[in-house]
Length: 519
Image (tube, rainbow, N blue to C red; front, side, top):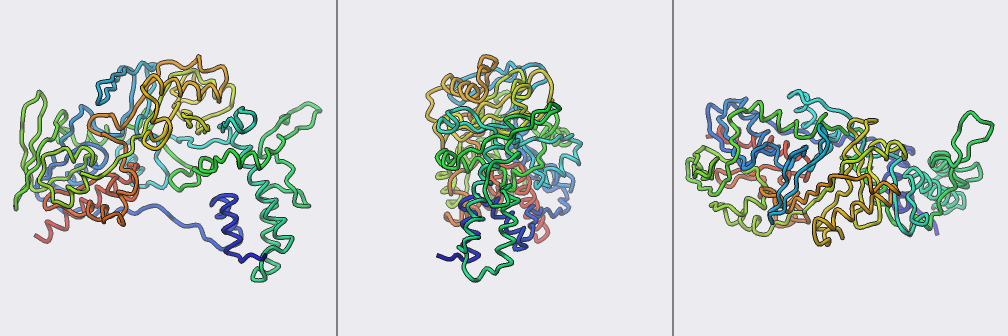
């Protein structure tokens, strides 16, 4: 049976992932490298003291207030917490974490250590957020999101012992390249692919998979060494290749290819000292324009203004009237308000579902660096807790904060664990599977469940509710509801990212500017 070029490339993707397909197509000159960064739609218009009340001091609310204030708008931000940032929350020694059910934890990390409970990465494609960091003087460092020294573990692979990712990545490439190269040499492609293309493909696969001249994969130094090269007479010996059938049985391709997603590709960044340095920098610029401890309760609109009622500091009921309102709070919180939203908006609020992401953090000596040569990156497991994420900050120091679990409780078996203690025990077990003997080194655990964090009630919008094809939800949220505008990552195509929140703010600012210009 012959294959067309398209069918062949499709099978490359099925066998080796879209990363292999991209590399192959670029090697053949069939696919140019594309620029994928989103462009801002920000258009500032002089506000001439137009009043705007902004609900929520997360990234969307802060960016809205920051840009509008610079253009002469009068902005007031109402934030129920005593800090800016919303889900951008860096937890340090002494921070108290309280869930909606009354469960309380206190952070006991070493002085100077921190845990980014919410966003922890700034992709290099997210130019808006990187630009604000530069503009506001937020110092950045590289965040090591992937490492070939990080591990993969499954009870069905290597007798349950963890395997370095370099082995799985490069052994997979080798096996797939051998199969495809032999397929080509046996004439499995149809006559539409000429001889020149076939030889170029074989040459690419020989290099991509590190095949022998006769197109066999016998292992590769790319997968690491059983006997490392050194200064002694003994020749280095690289690891024996893992059998392809064993890796197929494990089926961890999603994890293996996650770093190929544009937002996860190197290089990534993080603020030095904690992600919350970003909202803190915005808040410093805004000063008293941000009011903390203000819990919004009611919204009423008229033909000329909008009035927001809230419980202020000390429990006092207060109101504020403005020309426009920007609702930058999570939709799970917005639906609890007594607000005269349109029926269309109310339907969205009543039906929207949010995911509940969780993280478990530990204080520990850096055994992963000293013994496993892991400096940043993420290890993956086929276990209830399936992620262990290593810190990129303060490498080579004595201790650090290890993330022993990060996933969605609403879509994983970890969400079925009965309580905090069970989650922490499961996290400890996963670290032990990756690093035998070191579970005892884990201290001061802290568990964050965003579905149970007050004023969030979820991590980000989930399922298909954000898709324009689902009843036009996204299109509706991107339009004003009379004098109320909606901002936040949930009103963008970058759900869960600070970039989406910032770009949504730019959209709202531009819409407001166009509105007062046309008035």
